[in-house]
Length: 201
Image (cartoon, rainbow, N blue to C red):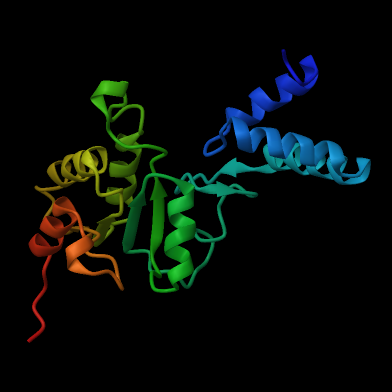
């Protein structure tokens, strides 16, 4: 016997379709929304609609933006010769939080995955390669995830640019997490750490 009304079940199913939210979380969120005041619920709904209507893709980097050009591409102080390629806007946010990177970004919205039918056209890699040429990028940092799809994307871009002697193509390092113990690190991660070792002296 179902404990909830049809409309509430429909709301829970819709919430459960969101990334990272399972049936239990969807149930908690739905009940929380119903317990909230009418003003709070309407404000949340308004913000979702407003964000959807007023958020665009940056014309240069494809990051999410409230203007035609995002705040990073519009910043004249950024290093315009260094371009960091990421899979998702969340990756831009993560890198920006470090405060280290001062270049520009390019968001792919995915990685190459032949099994899922995601090829160079779906990721608009021709647009990225054209941008690299037009803006005379000196270094392309590939910051896709260290998995099969991310590595495939990195290798494809490196192959496309191997004849261009004016650009350095680099890949972010991956390996043992800070503060961890080697005995608890899996073999694949440890292998990457050894392969990506750097000279100290």
